[in-house]
Length: 422
Image 1 (cartoon, rainbow, N blue to C red):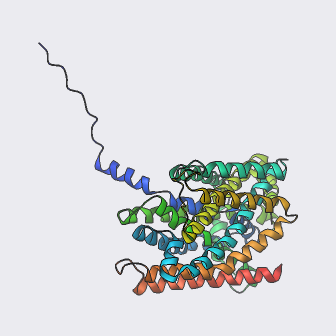
Image 2: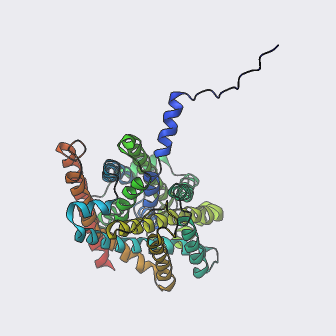
């Protein structure tokens, strides 16, 4: 009599595959926040850089990668070691008063950023004959639907899907057919003494670190329940995001430098529509409008998700009400109501504003002026709120302080210059 075969068991996965899967599960907060960093305002800044100065600001985009990583790595360190959001740590270390001060600054930055993102989305809609009211309405409803799913991981996946549209900018740069020799030659000829060049360089540096990035990434790490065991993978998540976002910025600069910058270097491109229309003669209607528009919508939507959640989390951390995407709206009503109010408020401001260009200039100035407050709290927490084995010290502390002071100085310079120019 034959003996029946025993049930077969699946072969165990190789150890390397298991480690890769474990790392992939950690990835997300860094990629999302970095994709959000390449927001509509940053796209316009990079485009203007390419038009006015060709490839002379290209090297700066690469140099900004380590600055971006060093600052955001502090949020990773604080999040995985303490398991707390940024607002919670400020309250614990410096008191609730300073917690409210930081959240007030965050609120100003968030509404400014949300206005920038939604105005960019509205601009894309207007390029295709869609009214501002309709495009804003669709954007607001989508943002509300994303958050009301009741799952952080689902929100993270949706944000990454939106952010993937930013890769369209790489295609735009390829279609512009830049000449490698010209690119290298111009990137090495830097007009250090030209005040217009320095102003645009300051605008690029000041746009690297946004106040809401710090709050979002630390709160997202806490929401995802990452621990010290995940620190290495979370750092790689942040590093990968820093590289990708600056490559996207470089792609926008290359596309405009190879086309508009070569033929009309005095062109002033202040809106998404102007940039797209200026690219169309060189890239064709498909790449000039559709592909570029998709990139802008992706950048605007992922940034809108990030900034709105950053403020809802930050206020919840300081005020003490339940603030988590893992709870349904009935279980965390204040959190979801605040998120909805933020998104709807941003939509109303953009819909009612007669001059979106002037509005975006004001936002850039405001973000620059808030950098010292945000980065000051970040460095202080990394120095004093962590156990000795993980806090900033020695030569690395000096490096961080240098980069933070440099970023704040250029951000303030660009902000004050922009205020005087407006």
